[in-house]
Length: 334
Image (cartoon, rainbow, N blue to C red; front, side, top):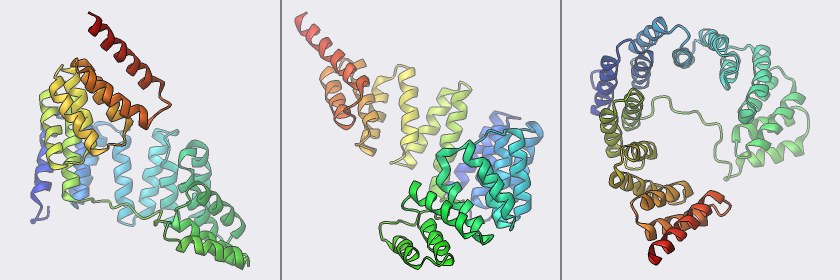
């Protein structure tokens, strides 16, 4: 383990180690601790924990996923591909995995296998077709099948117009086909300032604060799932202090407080959510409902009006608003 580990990472690791102690033999706890070690850079510890996870739960998809991503990061593309294939064998209908397999295959130069995987992925997961089409086009480009590369790149930029890498690839394919004017147009799109670098690689490690928030949020969710609400609350509250703009921990705290009948605390966390994202109709509506449950009808109506302004087509919000108006009128008459 690195000697100069940040205090935030030390805290995150300790939270996950405690989780492993509190839930001995739980593969999800081992997976989380291993993933955190990998994010920090402790690859040996991470691999050992993931292997422990698989000994307990041999079909645990999360462990295969993390091990495959690590193999890719270490440029062991054949190993990564085999791990992706194992995950596909475990869950053949899981979306996104054939795309990940294709990434490893392209990196190892196996273009035709990558194309086959991507064609299957497009059938299974049309929601992520832009990424699949872009990678499919890259494989065709490597095989010098410029017509098919052009076709797939065009599909990719239609689905995701700000994908700079696909625009560049399209310009390349068009140039190879001798279509200079179209290639120039595609290159202009690539150079357009509005095209904001789509397809940039995601940072694997993140930073110490994001890792700390992740550890506390995941630990809280596991404690909550096993009925340890007090521990879950402590972890979500810690995440909220570390990350003043994190919505997830506050959403979970709000739900926890409401289920426990702690409306004052739910009101506070929901107000924080509105401050984080004032354009969220859901946050305003939830805040209105909490006000209503606390018999603060005017405040509830005000929040629901804001939710309706943001989402005017919501019948649910309008119905709730009407119910509260009737309630207010009835209370006045009595």
